[in-house]
Amino acid sequence: MQLVSIPSACYTMGVPSDKALAAHEVCLTPFSISKFEITRELFQRFVDSSNYITDAEKNGGCYTISAGKESLNPAATWKNPDFYQSKKDPVVCVSWNDAQAFTAWLSHSSGKKYRLPTEAEWEFAARSGGKQEKYAGTNNDADLYRYTNFCDKKCIYEWNDPSQNDGYWSTAPVGKYAPNGFGLHDMSGNVAEWTQDYFADDYYAVSPKMDPKGPSAGTAHSVRGGSWRSQKGALATTSRGSAETGRAYDNIGFRVCREP
Image (cartoon, rainbow, N blue to C red; front, top):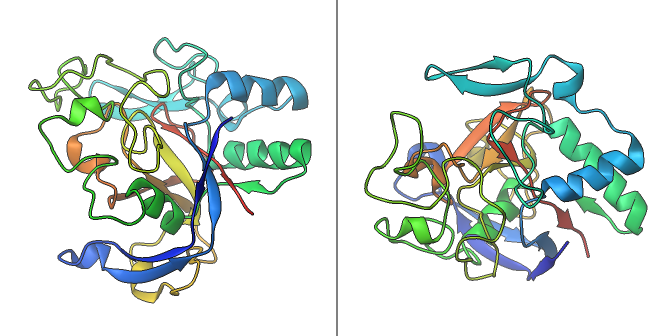
């Protein structure tokens, strides 16, 4: 697993012109973040080593889309989502709890502290160091297919974009698209990514300046980056989403951070 070192810095998180994404200054201490999303291959090593059983396997499946509506699919798990994946594709159908179990195993195995990135860390890294970068690596909508896997002309959903072709209708092997300024791949698209933070719509209004870690409690966690089945708006580096903590989805995976 390759990591990229991210320096300490302050930046303006959010969007100045958007009340819901209220711009505010954030300062971060140094951390490292995985260059790629966690793959099925790496997740398999974790499962084999720990005999771990995911939430989807225990609790009736993974959420997928059928007839344009997201619903629980009892047959879908990380081993067999509702589409083919290679071992180099990002793992999906994993809940926030499953991602926590993976980071705990990785920390124990390595003797170093791993966790999910906070929302503030994720956005700073995705924006190549807090730059005004609409998508991870580019501000240009017209060549988005070079940087990200999203709902393009190959996408099977009615909200697809027929003007672009990223080459995949579902997930793509990690690293297939151009990186951002930090050398990070798939921060926009491919799979949306769990963060460490609980989610609250109004958190930006009360966020501390130094290393914000999200609300102290909640029932859902923040998800960032958009995915293979997202429209372009969800791929924005400032876009926020959420998902219930114990649920698994066929378009959500994760990457990890390591503390200094």
